[in-house]
Image (cartoon, rainbow, N blue to C red; front, side, top):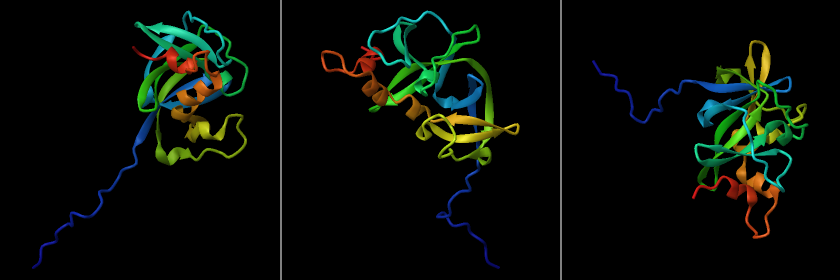
Length: 183
């Protein structure tokens, strides 16, 4: 009788894992961001405005001694700036630019919950029909017979792109990039 031996060259079976997403509201729409990039959620507090910034940069906050730029997601999507209410929050997200990590705050109208969305329940981003740039959307998650727009935080919060949009200061350096730099 022969013995069956499993070949070592066979690829392991990859199970589809559910990914956790933080869901939040902007206006009446539900959005989600992969929770792995989120550091914390804080109450909307006093921001210091910075002159000569694009409309979607609300200002900066002091987060335990670090200067953190705050982006208004609604304005980033080309919509009117979010109205601040008692449910407004700032979600602190770690973004990467040129191999360096930088914390950015994102103003949202309200944080909803953390959801696990199976990969099988995520559809590709639509090529039309949303009022958001298609490259900002990584997929459409189906949750309770409704769609949740899953954002690609790396593209939405691209420090390089936002720095280009904010322009350069008189010294030729990117103003946004220096706002959150750590010394």
